[in-house]
Amino acid sequence: MKEQIQPADGKLGILLPGLGAVATTVIAGVAAINKGIAEPIGSLTQMGNIRLGKRTENRYPLIKDFVPLAPLKDVVFGGWDVYSDNVYEAAMNAKVLEPVLLNAIKTELEAIKPMKAVFDKSYIKNLDGNHIKQAATKWELAQEVMNDIENFRTQNGCDRIVLVWCGSTEKYIEPSAVHDTIESFEAGLKSNDANISPSMIYAYAAIKLGYPYANGAPNLTCDIPALIELAKETGTPIGGKDFKTGQTLMKTILAPGLHARALGVRGWFSTNILGNRDGLVLDDPDNFKTKEVSKLSVLEDILQPEINPSLYGELYHKVRINYYPPHGDNKESWDNIDIFGWLGYSMQIKINFLCRDSILAAPIVLDLAIFMDLAKRANMSGIQEWLSFYFKSPQTAPGLRPEHDIFKQLIKLQNTLRHIMGEDLITHLGLDYYQDLVEAL
Ligand SMILES: NC(=O)c1ccc[n+]([C@@H]2O[C@H](COP(=O)([O-])OP(=O)(O)OC[C@H]3O[C@@H](n4cnc5c(N)ncnc54)[C@H](O)[C@@H]3O)[C@@H](O)[C@H]2O)c1
Image (tube, rainbow, N blue to C red; front, side, top):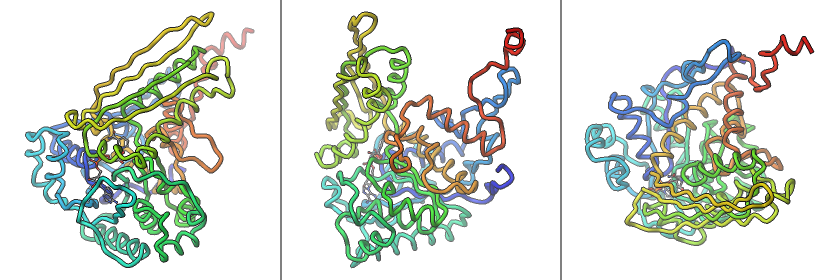
């Protein structure tokens, strides 16, 4: 397979629908890194290592030296937003990064101006932008997004394009008939079906053109049969949903450990306060519902109460998010976890994570774009489950349970890289180190 991977020659265009806190933090970060004034901490593609071969071989190359990834100096950013602020202004408003840092890369950031957005207020009530495309039908909007993408590609001399949704969370909807097939979806675009959300229009445009699409929010977007089918037809990698940061990251680190030791979990109460625009959008119950569904699924999957009712059958799991402007992007979360051990004796764990939401999300956006581009060059199309590592609610084949345990997700990701590069997979069995003993038995 290694021989079949196209080289990462030329420029990679990373287009982000939604140029808010997360998007501007990744764009500014890459500009600062390329200037040599910052480091890509938290990014597996830039700073992570991978073990190859046996432990005794001591081969731990950087991932970027092992697989042919697009170098950061070849990356060009663009995007869409419902507000017309350029990336410098949007980053200043988001207040994630220091003005000193942003001023050092002001020229690069000011040059990135959002394209007009596809927007429908019925999906996000708490936003009031006016930098919005006007067209008679959703079909025409999709054509306009395709034109935007192709114009961006030619104007910036890009060889390849990837889209990562960094827009606000849309209201909760369930898949319906219009999402079933490519035909029903395209007919729905033409008849302005209310169940086609703006994020689906961007996704349709990208996938139709064969450009990879990753979804950083919990909305359905490309997790519908019509777009999965289209992705197969056009040979396009897709993935989602919802960047795994903050509290859910902690949950998927801790819960596998409790489960591994057969410790019981009776309750897990999680609450958050945040004051950025994401928090404002999630203050609306319809939008919060989308996030809640995404956040709730992880524990059930990791602990599997149906398989082990004595340890997890009574699990009570609650997630709350409250909008609290004074905290800005510095989200604070509290978790109270009621666990029990030997002979049923109860214990408690308390976590108070003072995190920076966009600082955790930015490297995820970068890694997803870089790995999605690799997937495309390696002829991997459809749902990229090996990128579950980055998502709160990983998209999987219909009917297949997602894997939420971050350590299993990492093994899957690393083995995928070994597989496409023709290296031995690592099972961690390790019996061969004790071959003398095995043979003696
Ligand atoms: N920060 C995190 O840790 C994190 C984690 C998981 C998921 N997310 C998700 O990532 C997304 C971005 O988060 P953020 O903190 O940057 O939010 P943000 O509010 O700062 O940015 C979102 C931007 O998207 C724009 N937008 C909304 N609808 C749009 C549309 N239809 N087309 C183009 N632009 C549109 C908004 O105007 C805004 O500028 C949110 O959906 C959030 O839930 C963030």
